[in-house]
Image (cartoon, rainbow, N blue to C red; front, side):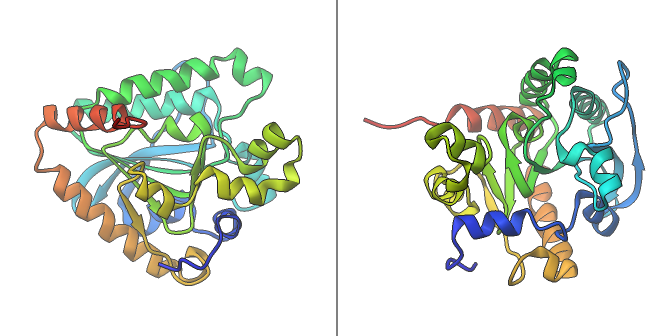
Amino acid sequence: MNNNISAAERLQIARNPGRPSVKDYIDNIFDNFFECKGDRLHSDDYGIIGGVAEFHGKPVTVIGTRKGRTLEENLKCNFGMPSPEGYRKALRLMKQAEKFGRPVICFVDTSGAYPGLEAEANGQGYAIAQNLYEMSALTVPVITVITGEGNSGGALALAVANKVLMLENSVYAVLSPEGFASILWKDSSRFSEACDMMKITAAELMEMNIIDDIIPEPDGGAHNDPEYSFDNMDKYLKRYLTLLGKESARSIRTQRTQKFRDFGRCED
């Protein structure tokens, strides 16, 4: 792993529009993907894609945030900021996975949940909280991969997982560095300083035991060699699904809840 890249530079790589998207990973790693739409309550959110697929011959549920490539897709996906309908759709698919004993694999690349008036009116906060609550109790293996940005509760709503992995140049934080700088210094242009203070890189989070592993990327980022990135993703997912497949349902749930309870614990 290249340790000579600053946190701000990794942020820029994470935001590169050419990075492989969730749909790219689905198309190149999984077989027979069947997309499921709608939250069965209000509508469908294009900003979250989910469905059933096969991974090395075994059924899995795949869920991920998506930003889109073109301007038209960006607008349709709300630039990767999911609505309550998206989180409810994700939860519906997780519960379906629980019912049929399928592992859940989540891909996260979002600047955060959409904070607009309509989203709040439709229960954005409750939808995210419900996901956190329900994911904690799942008895099937859950693996989440941060592929680009993973900011705020909008990312965590898909990241209460047994194993949280990050691509080498992805970032994971409580909010965007620009938002952090705006709150702390009233100056979003100081986001580079914020990147260093926030400890948002994969290496820093690995050191603090916030994540479980780092998936290497080619020089310059995953977009420079997508095939290498797909192969690496496949290897890491296979490794951790095999490990979790040896655990009992009770152990899987206990391990996940204890993992998050241990965050922030310190010794005198």
